[in-house]
Length: 248
Image 1 (tube, one colour):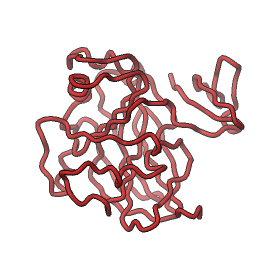
Image 2 (tube, one colour):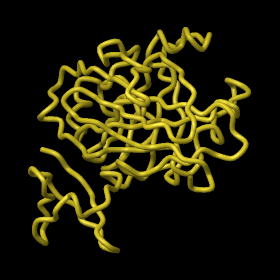
Image 3 (cartoon, one colour):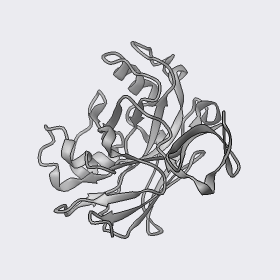
């Protein structure tokens, strides 16, 4: 099942995707006539750094026994086909394709064994980063990760029953049709059950909360005009264009 949110005029609809339509309580909405929105409204967005060893190696950083986490603010969220704004003054902006966990029910102090029971499904995220502003690995990368439009998400949520418990999914990021990142979630340093158990040991996770699970190697600079396509096996393709801050 695919869960999505669309906007037509000033009205927002949530429902299940079936072919070219979103099926809602108010009837069927034609996708072509609507704007894609992020498929959920999270109370918090948690992201993992360095969950692929090859990505840690390319940055010259060591991995940790526990997940290394940071928060993305909600202002970063945009939907499928929306534009990413390249900030004025930035010189090195790049994309990071990531499998994203969507929490389905309230979750606190859960074991790794039971962790997947609290997952609604999975979607695709682009953890856009302005690396200019990462000046120390000991400081949270709030500015580097927190610009408006720096978290494209979607296009929809694929429910966990379609993915299964053995999560081995290929991730590919293309820029203007050229592959820049390629990896598989089977290479995670920290598994999804471990991540959920770890997070829920000190914070309550709520329905709609997001966990970005880390990106493969392949740091690649972007420029205005670039088209970014992130595909994840069994889920789909998230597409966004990057534009200058003045809108071109």
